[in-house]
Image (cartoon, rainbow, N blue to C red):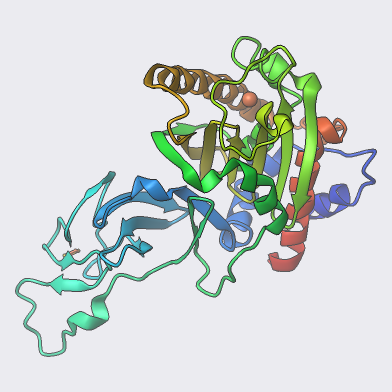
Length: 369
Ligand code: FES
Ligand SMILES: [Fe+2]
């Protein structure tokens, strides 16, 4: 693992005109994964989903990051909280899936918690030393940004700011998009492989000839802004494509005729187009397995029901195409011959280099083994 950490520093320091990708072990080693779980993943801000997944008080959904089961719930005060989904009695998860509830009742001994995580009732608990007030569910650090919900497992985490990325998304009115679809699936790949795959335009025409090539051919990919904790690129549409739905009124012609793809490191990748927003939250499970949650949102009433259904079907197919490639690659990445390989230029794979440089910085700052 020292080898991989040193390699990361060495490759991230290469000059921009000779970038190299990391060797296979970076994506397959369980030691490397556990190191990341203690460092870059533990200290990162993770997108859990969209704010309008929980529009009403009592709406909730569950998630899990590393070893932490989470309960995302809208409170009576309308705040979105992320609570530990772990009963304060003997550790049972309190909720599963999604729904709406007045109280969370543990399925083991029926302790009941309010929407803010406070313990309301604990049947037969008559010991003098029992103090219900001290049995509140712990609350994680939360930040809302552009209609997304983020959590940080580090209680001392400082809020994040991405001023330039905010400026890039502002004309799209990302926060105004409304949710139309949520799905979750497990992929047998490493979490970093999906970040890299989603964020490079090099593969679009090869892997997605029927689904994406017509809209976003590889040759029109252009690097956009990057900064501390994020990167982005434009997947531009050919001139003969007329995008469906105009999106927000302030969008420029160029913004209307491209998908702006961004990654918020470590685990969110998203595609923002005029009328469609797709976001993937990656939940790393082990070196060779992730859970992917993806959401699709549309700009106000821009798209009709049939078009939305077509878009969902299209993205299901796109995800299937990527998954098939990544799962096959995950096998060959175990090879002794999966050494570092040369990356393409900025417009095609510059985002992978940005990710590598960010990982190297994080590892240098956090990675005292
Ligand atoms: S573990 Fe939840 S009530 Fe006992
Ligand atoms: Fe893809």
